[in-house]
Each structure stands twice: as C-alpha cells, then as structure tokens.
Length: 195
Figure 1 (tube, one colour):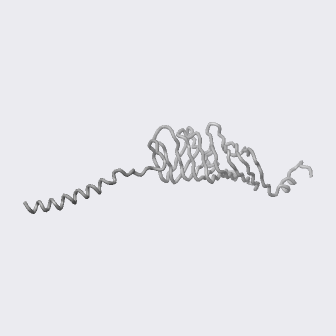
Figure 2 (tube, rainbow, N blue to C red; figure 1 turned 120 degrees about the horizontal axis):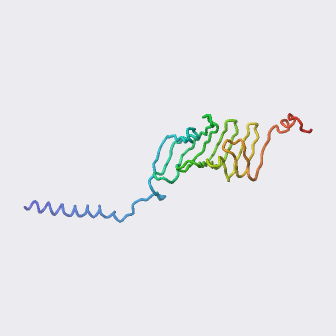
Figure 3 (cartoon, rainbow, N blue to C red; figure 1 turned 30 degrees about the horizontal axis):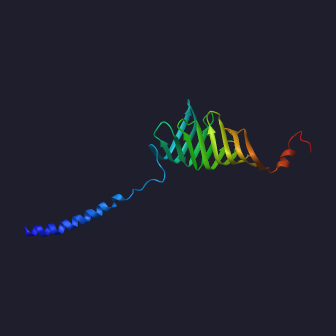
C-alpha cells in the first residue's frame, strides 16, 4: 500500500501538469481561409467540357483546373483556358487561349481574361486583356485594349471591341491606331484606284 501511495504521489502531479499543458492552447483561434467560401463546389483537374446546341457541338473547353458550384447557380471557373469553337460542319473555326475563364451555369456567356489569344481559321489573330462572348447575341465584346493582326500583316490596336463570333466583322471602339505594311503596294494593285 505504501508503494501505491508513492506511485500516486509521483503520477498525480505529472498528470496534472500534462493536462494543464494540453488544455492551455484551447483559447487560440483556429486558422481561417483568406477568402470566405460560400456553398459547396467541385474541383476537377485535367478535364474537358463540351457544349452542344441541339446536336451541334458549339465549343469545347479544356483546362488543367476547373471549379464548379454544386448548386444550380454560379459559374464554372477554368484555368488555363483552351477553348475551341466549331462551325456548323463540326470543324474548328476559332481557337481561344487565356489564363483564366468563366462561364455561367447555362453556358450562354463565356468570359476570358489574362493573355487572351484568339486565332481564327483564316489566320486573324486577336490579342486582348479580356473578352466576353454571348450565345444570345453571337457577339464577342471587350471594353479593354485589343490588338488585331490580319492575315495581310496589318496590326490594329484600340480600346473596346465589338465583333461577330466568327470575327469576320469587327470594330475597335476608340483610341484606334495601326500599322499597314505594304499598304502602297497593295493599293497600286487594285483596279480603279487613281494614282
């Protein structure tokens, strides 16, 4: 019995000290996310998303990372964007590359930003900070600076863009400037142009 009292006298202080040490950290705040997360979402790596209108493939999005809200509302985020747009025959008509992009759950708008690069089938190249496509209007718009390089080598720059989705008709909205290599030679080759 004497031995158990000695053992109790040695163990009891040790248990009390360990309990005090273990409980002392409970008043500390737990780490929190830098941004508030609302709702649940799904993260997908190395995936592709296809959008069809009826039986026709309209576009295909490939990304290393996608984040999708699990609710019926919200956006789908893609990083980086590799977007292929298809014509009515199913051939790629336009390729879009960008750092980041989003589409809404109905997939009737698509916004891309960060080093946006667009190349059409006829070799027109569009470089922009940000572009937005609308399925309803079949238009691509921007309120940021845009550069367009034509197949003939012309380079036009301006702020703001309004274009049809195939980029066969487009206009820069303000602060327009450009470079036109071989302009005089091209003009001399046209019939009916006075010298």
